[in-house]
Amino acid sequence: MNTVNVVGLEIDTRHYINGQRVASAETFTNTSPIDGSFLGEISRGSQTEVDLAVQAAKSAFPAWAALGPKGRGEKLLKLAELVEENIESLAQLETMDNGSLLRSHRRGVMPRVALNIRFFAEWAINELQHPEFETRGHTNKISWDPSGVAALITPWNAPLMLATWKIGPALAAGDTVILKPAEWTPLSASFFADLTKQAGIPDGVFNVVQGYGKEAGAALVAHAGISRISFTGSVPTAKIIAKSAADNLTPVSFELGGKSPCVVLEDADLDLAVELAVEQYDNAGQVCLSGTRILVHESIADEFAIKFKEKAAKIIQGDPREEATQIGPQIHQVHFERVKGFVDRAKESGANIVMGGEPNSELGGLYFRPTLVMNPDPESEIVTSEVFGPVLCMQTFSSDEEAIEMANSTEFGLAAVLVSGNKDRAEKVAKELVAGTIWVNCFFVRDLRAPFGGSKKSGIGREGGNWSFDFYADVKNTVFSPNGWKE
Ligand code: NAD
Image (cartoon, rainbow, N blue to C red; front, side, top):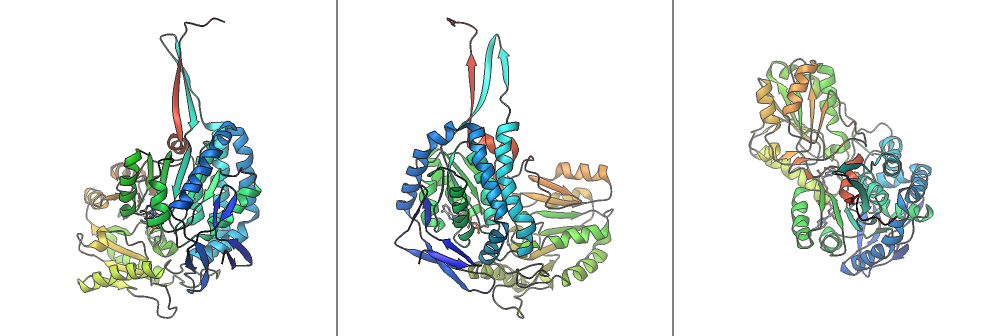
């Protein structure tokens, strides 16, 4: 009842509060998107467990804050090492739970989880500046003080990766933490909790409350004992959380959805443009940053479309544990139906679907074929809404100005991919694109020193480097007068 046996591991699926496993009376069922197999029952958190976790995190806060960046860093670096030692287990576990590629978890994602922790621990020790400057003989001393208990709420598409973008800086900044993972992917957080214990992170400093968003998540963000809310997820959920946070004026950091453009100018290296465009199907389209609106100059659109379809037709869809597989399933039946609903409605409204457009009948289950919608109505929902599945739209433009206007025409502003053969031109166009990250002739290059986040409805605030500490810490200025000193 309280454990899941998966990929040779025994995972305790109760909450992790104050260094102890805590069960709820009720549980919810966890299944694998790979084949629908039953993975186990997970403790279903509510107000009671959230209260316990906040209490524990508040009690643990003063001692953790007092350790300072170096003291905390020692434990966080140990935690990063333990993640590295457990890459294979974490990779297999995450793949079973969320259906993303095993090989990318092994080689990219889990090493990155370790880096997320190490980077912020080291940044707090070595890079976070404490500037001092004079004002009419007075000395300003800037400090970054721990703020209290951070509530971290994360989605299912890259569970531990996205969680550690938050856990790393929050703990390094001296906050204590309560993580509420997505209910469709609870397992890696449970395993990770054991690693924090092994790393010597004191009881109560890191807590996990499992459960549904509307129950555990809602209780957590409404709690008056929380000093920060860091949320990655959808725009509708963010609106609910923002209202709840308003009652306590709790600061929020939001990393939200996108409908990013992939803009291909007519001077682009066509093969590179095609490669980058096809990459937007990665993780079966379940990537917030995905450039799902392919905007191509009309003079090269036909050639581009032929090459794109040729390349996309070769995408190998299947079991994400197989080395050759390039994209796997959708996360859950509910999400699969949502993606299918978008495509079905596009079909009904007469959209020209030139690739895919249906579930992969050879595989069954939650596998949806890579889909391309050609020249859809710019006002239609398939162009304006986030589908979060393997569904791309292709549209054409006739000038840079038109490309920019189309690229900026949604309510989102998370990212953009721009492909061009001319650096000056690319710089001019990139300057006009409204998004937190613009990738020119590349995709998914993410340096933790750089700001990451969304413009418009894609988010509030930025993560990475100092930006993370700006959020999790209480940034303080102490002004020392030259007068009044007795010694
Ligand atoms: P979601 O908003 O449904 O859920 C995200 C998390 O919020 C889950 O843990 C859920 O349990 C919790 N939640 C739900 N209702 C809540 C409530 N009322 N109060 C508190 N917590 C609540 O999103 P999802 O479907 O899990 O994830 C997909 C979305 O996440 C997409 O929109 C995607 O673009 C976005 N995303 C953004 C980024 C980014 O960095 N910008 C990264 C990954 C995913």
